[in-house]
Amino acid sequence: MATVTPSSPGRNPDARFRILPELAHGARLSVITVAVLALFSTGATLALPMVAARLITALQSGEAGTWGLVLILIGLAATLAGALSAYLLARTAQNMLLRLRRRTIEHTLAAEVRDTQRLGAGDLSTRLTADAMNVKRAIDVGPLQLPLAVLVLLGTIVIMALLDWVLLLITIASVGLAFAGVGLLVMALKRRYLHLQGVIGGLAEKFVGALDALPVVKAYRAEPAVLRDLSDDVEEVRRVEVSVARYESLLGPVLNLGQQIALVSVLIGGGVRLVDGSLTLAEFVAFLMYLLQLAAPLMTAVGGIATLQQGLAARDRFNEVFALPAEDRPHPTRPTVAAPVPSPSPAAVRLRDVEFAYDTDPVLRGVDLQVPERGLTSLVGLSGAGKSTVLGLVEGFLTADQGQVQVLGRDRADWSLADLRSRIGYVDQRFTLLRGTIRSNLTLGLPADSTGPADTALFDVLDRVDLGDVVRALPDGLDAVIGAGSDLSGGQRQRLALARMLLHQPDLVLLDEPTSQLDSITEARLRSTVRDLAADRAVLVVAHRMSTVREADHVIVLDEGRVVAQGTHDDLVRDCAPYAALVNGQLLLDRDAPLALA
Ligand SMILES: Nc1ncnc2c1ncn2[C@@H]1O[C@H](COP(=O)(O)OP(=O)(O)OP(=O)(O)O)[C@@H](O)[C@H]1O
Image (tube, rainbow, N blue to C red; front, side, top):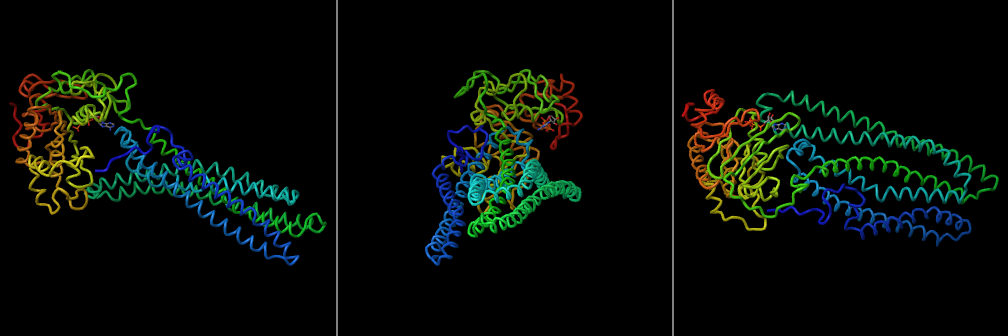
């Protein structure tokens, strides 16, 4: 089983991500080598026109051989150094992206379920793909191409000043206006890039949601409606992209125009100065070469700034993920307790005056309830009463806004979430399985360094949920892959989720409607398995079936976020009007027996 190792050991996982320090982290030698090679390549490029001028002068005196050789050598060396520095930079960037992606996955897994659901699976996944690519492109230009382009620009300008400062002034005056225009364009682009990445994330989020619900979409012939909805988002992406393209397409021509004007001005001015003897032919040729050479670094600088803006916008989206609080963050006042020991308290779960709201509307209002340390407890109530929310508080997916949540004799906040969850067996409403083999699903969460439980132990729990023979009949047995094309049935998936819980031998079991997809024979066997489990531990079941409720030793009735009664089924039918109404009104489903009072 793969383990997740911290991406940056010893570093603050909450620290904001900054591209340059992250790039240099652990790669100083590479970064220095890249810088040296790039500087050499730049210096050589800058020197080339001067050598060319020397070659022209030497040609006039008939001694061109040496300068010709120097020109070729410098050209070759500049090319090699440039290529090597680009490769080294790309390799360093990929190492940084590896850490960035790993940290994003790590942080997303550590965040609260509510936060990750709010951001959405699709939008979060675009950070690993499109946003990471934007950061990579920014690295391609940011730390090297852009500074070097600026260096070449400055170096060229200095040399041009030395050659003829009057011609330089003419050049600067000609391109100055173009520069101001480019600055305005770049500022407008930054805002649009951020918006663009947001709408692309939103589109991915919606598309993933639609694919997730595809069977339902098809069953309701809702493809046209979904297409319309997604088309609106695609149209929005197009609109923003076009707006970006409008500004990007202006960059090149504005710069070109500046350069053309500069060229014409320099030709005229240079011609005059050549005629009056202020400038030699070799100097004029060199000046013109430098002027033409200005175009490449200028374009690099301008394009680079735009790419950099895109990368910075992507960086901000990564920082949005890194800013999500980890769910297991230390309590501000209480010290963390290393090894919680269950107290002799008779309750496996106790909620006292618990208030909770997802947004502003209260979902739980002063909930007081107690789950005995042994036996089967059913939590019942109308849909939306807050039953799953109670399980979420016990599992630590949610944190109470007010009141006290005690689990296995200890305040919830005193448990580390890993310790707490290792003691709880949880089967969610959707019986979620991960893509992978039956074995990897069964052993999910077991220590990664062990060789894993023996097959006999795995078949033992599978037999307890009547799934052993089904798995034995599969060609790959325990190593059959589920979640792809060939799949288990809904009920079989449900039983596998239950077997996973059994394997973990938890002290407290939380089941969210565990029998909704089982045939009556399997359901009866399962009830007996749950009963066996409840003999020496607490089992808390969110139940919608009379059969489950009748089995329960203790029933808790939840109504609109309040506990209205607790007791045995018989007592509650007799004494609790809302419970009796729930039962009489057939609000608890009972497949195998007509609804009847005890
Ligand atoms: N992630 C969420 N964000 C906002 N509101 C939520 C969220 N999950 C649940 N709710 C709301 O909280 C209330 C209680 O939901 P909960 O799922 O706990 O009810 P329940 O009793 O388990 O319902 P059911 O029996 O239908 O599963 C409902 O009004 C629901 O709309």
